[in-house]
Length: 224
Ligand SMILES: Nc1ncnc2c1ncn2[C@@H]1O[C@H](COP(=O)(O)OP(=O)(O)OP(=O)(O)O)[C@@H](O)[C@H]1O
Image (cartoon, rainbow, N blue to C red; front, side, top):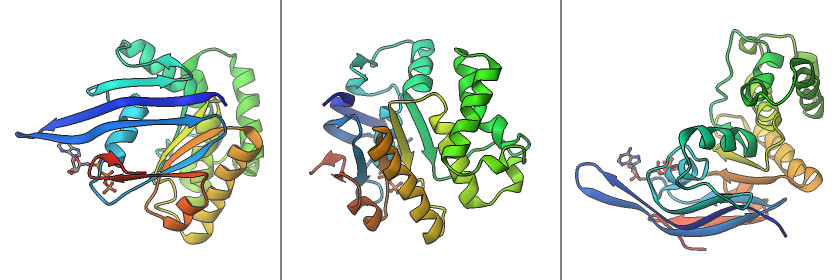
């Protein structure tokens, strides 16, 4: 099966002011269509790892591959392109632009990528909104929709450039149990039916137990 993301011997240090070895020889792969979760106690390095995997932090040792392309060492322009093209993000907080409509918010990453006409982007955005059953919200301002709806909009936005992988840092952390389950089911469906890969940091054991694989971290290491 195709590998979508690979981390090889990732080590990360913080200097604050003494040297702190926060990630210790991290190695793993995420395959196409795989739904993986990262678990571990607070402070074990999950967010630090996700920041590196999502190409946002470049200050680390080791190698990172996205769709078999070596990302490590790329210049900022290429990193930004690869991030926008290959990775969709869903955070605990949705980061929608509140004065923009739902449709405009979903269109933004595709406009940034600049590979399609506005008409095509709008069509694609509407397709994603339909897929998530929120197309009726398209013309509403982001400030006017509920928390659960906002998170579904954030997923539509993450999908707009047809990424190979969705990464999430506690994407259900701010939601009530009903909406959290709803978001989990959307992720599951994306993995099962669209063959999309997902890598989700979560504290929710029930959530993690339903994913294909749990990557368990402890003190900066993957222990299983
Ligand atoms: N910028 C920084 N400078 C110095 N130390 C940092 C920095 N960011 C994080 N750390 C430390 O690195 C360790 C790992 O932090 P990280 O946020 O990755 O943990 P986490 O597993 O995501 O925790 P949580 O589950 O609470 O979000 C912690 O000890 C944290 O205090």
